[in-house]
Image 1 (cartoon, one colour):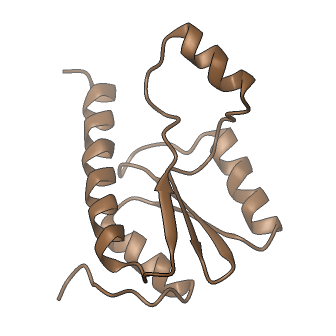
Image 2 (cartoon, helix red, strand yellow; image 1 turned 120 degrees about the horizontal axis):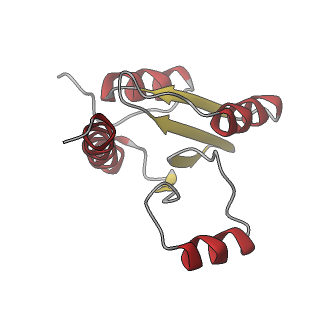
Length: 125
């Protein structure tokens, strides 16, 4: 198995753990979704998505809570942040929104708490 394939599987596992955590931990007034732009697509599907406005660099998870948009970009411990992802993160910050790169569930929880999100669950009880 190639290193890139292992990295994709590791990021998929982290994404599933984060999704399970968000389902349990976020307050009921929060809304969130995964932004599924990173998977392999056919050339036709890719062209259609681009035509509809799908842009590179958007975070993996978008959370809306208490008037704020929060972006979570998930990466494996060694996963690089692309130029497009960094640019989107800078745009979030410039517009008063929250954005981070999280490489673990602990990092997700810590960031959400730092943004004032009252979580209903913790990673470590």
